[in-house]
Length: 308
Image (tube, rainbow, N blue to C red; front, side, top):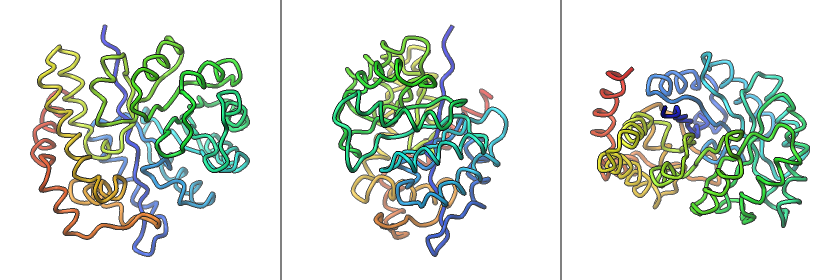
């Protein structure tokens, strides 16, 4: 029997025009994600501009997502911080607020140098939310921490009682495969590279967290269904849609480019917060018109609704 596939959106944080958080928008984001077939949201991460939020703002945003989520819609709160103490505080808050899980990058300014040092940083964060699954967020292109996720997984299994797996956002598929092997059936591995999801599925990935999933969940559903049916040509066509969206957004910055595109094809989450620049309407239109996203969403949403 084919395992279910988790489609978790790396959610945008909505802002007002003055740059303050707009938690009133989050219910609309949840409604749209549920309608599109997403199974959860990963909040206050890279796409959610979590590092640009204060601790108080991150708590406010987490509370709004948790309050808006219907039963069965998974909320994973990213609590990673340059300060382990701040991350632990955020983890404890997420647990008290009713999150489904917490995740954290390792401290990314003064960096751990080995898997053992990295696990020592993660352990107190996980211990602050002992009743929740804890995920290590591996994203070396952003943090600069290049310790293989496989090594971290092996140490964390022994060191962290509530260690539940890895959010793997990297392009080393060899390391990804070894993480999956190391975790066997007891860990979940969320893959975070939207543009490489299809080859990752060949390694056994059945959980994904994606920045484009704020609006491409129907496309992902179509790709997963085609892959599971053995129709690799159809699956590749859907992967290309997502790859092209990322390619069109990249010259402007992935987070801000995709957030601007989301205003046109999904929910308007407002501007970005510095240091990210907010795109102009013309830039957002250019991204949309450079891709096949509008047609692809129309086709795959219809397909998803019929399947549901």
